[in-house]
Length: 360
View (cartoon, rainbow, N blue to C red):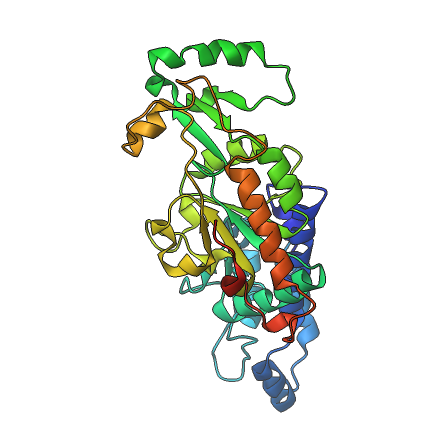
């Protein structure tokens, strides 16, 4: 099974590194033998080669519908996932499921257990034991590269969006401005016609992402719908250098109206979160650096009861040199420096970013 090949999002840099890393780790999980398997093998002298060949055959099918045919169901039931006396069970625990099949033994998923990682692949679900194993492997991988994990909110943190219908009369000039800068590679104002929205990127955002990527493995985490998040990801990361498949949306949350690190395949001790809203991180406030909200459009000011004209109405913007993103980038650099300080006596693998995270 290759998530790098299956994933709808591909890149040629750090995002691809993440996919390749996850790929190799899941392949390791699928090839490792559990204690139960070894015991049964010794007791019954089972030939696992036949089982593995059948599992490899299953991986060639694209959908569960492809599996549900007479010619495949019979051999699957004969050799995999049965509890009939005299037959063997390779798992439990199942490390996870891909397209409804255990990534180790090929048994069909029955109880819907584990956590869905739909942002990596819509058909991927991992068990708690496997999640912890992957986090441990990721911890070693990131510490080797001297990187931490950065979770980035979108709206009011990296950008501001508004619907066409909410544009005020004194913001109408923005449409003319967009038409005049279509060929400008450095433009920060965009018209998303399919969504009937305007989006304004926060000043310094591209420099911020470029510099932060040297110190952090980065995720997008938004409460917006996936279609919107993917459009914004194209604006922020057109070459898929920073995020690739690491775009988490509302549908991926395991708790309503809350964001959680349970869907992050990384150790909480390495995670720094940038978000303008503290309330959605109830379980992870110690990881959060709360951002000053970016109110470019008038609708944003109205949404939060901000009784003042927006930046667009004032025909001005934050300054790149000392705006919110430039300021928080320096905080992130200091946090990284303090975490990896060679003068600290403790082993780096035992350190926790939360006590050293410097608040603005």
